View 1 (cartoon, rainbow, N blue to C red):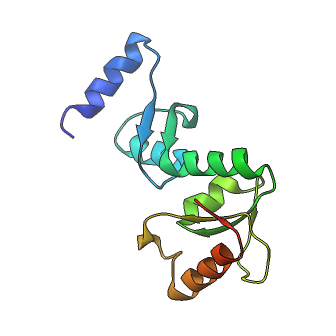
View 2: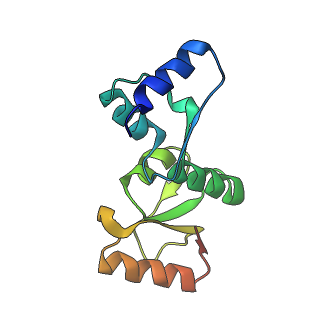
Length: 126
C-alpha cells in the first residue's frame, strides 16, 4: 500500500505504543521477515496473526501439550513447536484439528480424510 512504510516509520519514531494485527496464516516471525523486506524493523511481540491467535486458543482451551492435527500450514508447526504435540496419525487421540486456507499443501485429500476421522472421534475443530 503506497505510503504505508513511511507511516509506520513515523509512528515508530513518535514513540506511540503500536502493534500490527493481521488475518495472515503466517507466524509473527514470518510477518517480521516480510516487513523487514519492505524496510521496516518490527518485533514478533508487536504482531498478532490469525495463526498465532488460533494457536493461543488451542493452548488456552486444551492446555500445554495439546495434541493437534494441522491441516492449515507450516506456520502452525512453528508456532506450536515445543508447546503442543503435533500428530500426523489417524490412530492417535487428538484434541484439536486446526484448519485454515487450503492453499499451503497441508490439506491433501489424504490428510483431509484423517482430519474428518479425528473430528468424528471427538477432536475439536479450530
